[in-house]
Image (tube, rainbow, N blue to C red):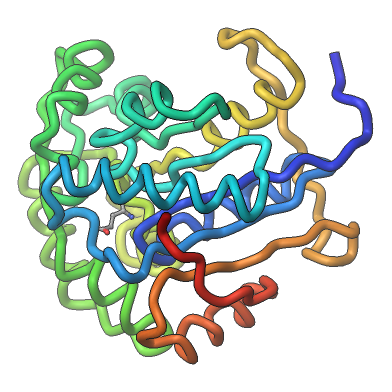
Length: 278
Ligand code: DGL
């Protein structure tokens, strides 16, 4: 069952730039969608916030986002926000939400050593939701959890001049020492390091993230497909703008505005300035 041709607006929310690879994946694989990206730069980093504060913050922000952009679906393109606030937001707003969870299930399917590494924020690593995911899908595997907070900060604030080499080497060593053959990127920010991770770790680990699963879930919701369906997504090859799709980019603080404008331009998004929390 395919959707009629109307364009749907999909909003992606993260503490910063971590969700951008998710929006790009969706725009490249799902026809007839526009993207709205909201980087909550005033409240970054989410991983250091108290769960109650983060839930309240997201409630005000999502209300403002809905009022301003009228999205059809909101994607929490942030593992921390998803483990902490997804249920609360679903209970608060009528609009459908898609949450991001660490790719533990695919990792458990692929790991032959039964040793899996995960890097994420401390909040995500200690959340009972992660324990539940591991219990459900990877109960027989040994999981090594690494917080990698410094890496997140560097990706967010020094996007154009990152120097993560040494840190990545030492994280890689720790996963290798633990015998991991598969590493889950449990914080959306890490996907910006995809090429470097592949170069440094490609011969040691399979590195997994959840972009594919998120795009598939958006596609299911848009087309009214059942949760257990497995739609095949096709890479459109279209560069943003060529197929008429749009991507808009908001932040939440005046600080670093020129830096974030540059990031929006780098990804060919239309910079829209500040979206205020309600
Ligand atoms: N990108 C977010 C995640 O996936 C977290 C980064 C932060 O701490 O703000 O968890």
